[in-house]
Image (cartoon, rainbow, N blue to C red; front, side, top):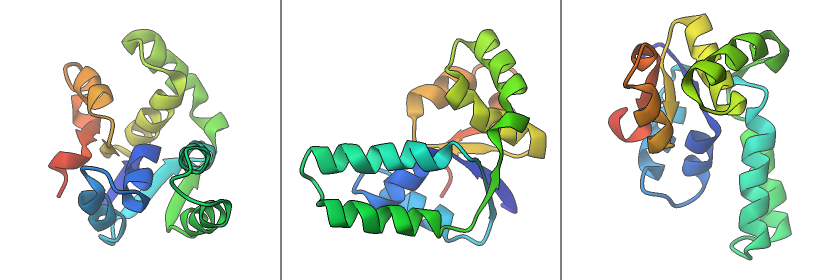
Length: 140
C-alpha cells in the first residue's frame, strides 16, 4: 500500500483503546503516504475533547494527544479544493459533506480511504465508490 487517505476515526483509534486500535497504529506507521483533508485536525481534536469531558483523560493529556496528532506524517489537503466534489458526493450518497471530503480526496489521488466507521464504509461500498473505501478492520 503506497498511499491511502485516513479519516479521523482511524487517527482516533490509534490513540484510544478501540476494537481496531492495533490496526490503526500499524496503518499509521506502515510507511504509506497518508493523505487527509485539513478537516482531520478539528475532528480528532473534538474526539479528544469528548474524552476529556467524560473524564477519560485529563486536560493535560488532551493537549499532549493533540500535539502528537499534529506531528503525524500526514499529507494534508485544503478542504476548499475538495468541497465541491464532497458536496456532489454527499448529494449522491446521503452522507455528510465532512465524510465525503475524505472520499473526494481518495478519488483525487485514486487511492482508498480507510475508515474506522463501519457504517460509512458499508454504505459507500455498495455503489460506485467501493474502489475508494475500506474499513480499518480489513486493512491489516
